[in-house]
Image (cartoon, rainbow over all chains, first blue to last red; front, side, top):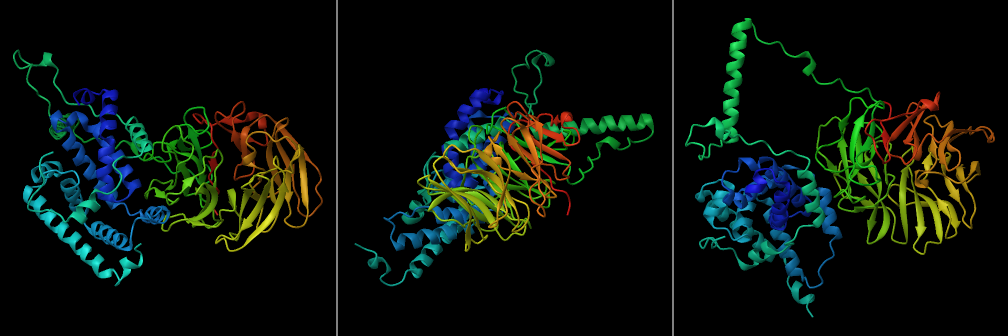
Length: 181
Length: 435
């Protein structure tokens, strides 16, 4: 990090390569769109390279990168040009034959509920329950008070549980057994 | 990372759903991101050189944050301005040269590629007048862009954005040339063809774009709204490979090239934009047969293309009068990229094409009289591809001797052809004149 901060391109490339998959996985989960996730990670890396000299404490590099990534996800979330991509991805993705109707309906409702959340709430949920960060760590990454982390988490989980309840209500009687072996 | 929050656990189903998905990003995404970072400079840090500091203070970290540095800069600038104003008794007048450049008159811009002298390798699209003035990048958002095509109103450009400098295919994006609005992805995630001539065509009203993309390994023709508001619709099925779509001037048809999966039959067809009606324009049956993309002269009128029936025959520059008869203004061996086809002058009175032995050839066409056989050879003034300037008094194409540039050829004096400064390989697009 120190070498990259002083302008060493190779050092930055190595850092970016090592972090890319993790950043992409987080962005993909926040944005639920592969193309938008790629864009967000790219923006994050451009910003990181441009501003790296302003990072005072190299040990905070990873938290700093996650903050840049969530900011980039906010920007992506503001862009209202996803319709074509999402429709195509849904229609082109081969469906998993192991999926039964319940799983599909549940995933659909969770997806819908998740996408209705603001990006900031999605980020808290993903950083906590996918990345395994503690509330103080999320607080540092997002630069929000710990209390706000808790309240966002509470709100997001409640919304996701509501989505799960919707999924159960939507399933017709016998729908699962009809597709069983 | 330390332990999870214990008071706000999620249900296992939600946790499982959150965890599902790819753990690894696409390799092309990493390469694209790294390439993008190479296009920006690291901002300089604000540090004091050690010899500025008193003895004993050199070991201190006296870096200032960017905010602090900006504040210092603002204070210093204000101080300088105040001193200057007090000395001169007046404030500085606005610099007249800092006003924005006047917009380029429509019909006088070319969208072309700059970059390495290799087709399909790390190019960036620029806009400029034919003499290279008023040059600016088409967009700064994507690192690579190629094969631009102007919309009929000349205000937008559709282009391919490859994911890395080594790939020729990529995302199909639309951008306004005045810099307003966002980039719009119009391919709906469908993989484009790795071609060296554009595989897109605007509808005459600019509302839709026909393009060739790959669906389950089959090259297919799609129609999509040019504002990205809906997913593309395939108008051809998987029974053959189709490419090179060209929209008719009245918007009623899209012509395209078709090759059966066994590679024996090659056709030109036209389909209605919804794919409901499909008609055959011409058919050749031979492994070595060749038909180029269609260039329309007018709705339901003559079309021009390269025609080779196979079996070692010569190739013709064909003018197809659609279900009546055909003219062959020239026969021999085409030059450059055959896919570029045979192009019509804006007024429909001539065709131009590239040949191997005679260079650029122009032939007359008069639909009211039998073909008079008059052709003019301009010699090797272009290579790879050639097309008409919208004014009809010039051609433009790949620079002779390997296409490493875009050349503009005035018909009044072909010897005075000039190359757009900085242009490299790749088919360019000239902005249409205003309606």
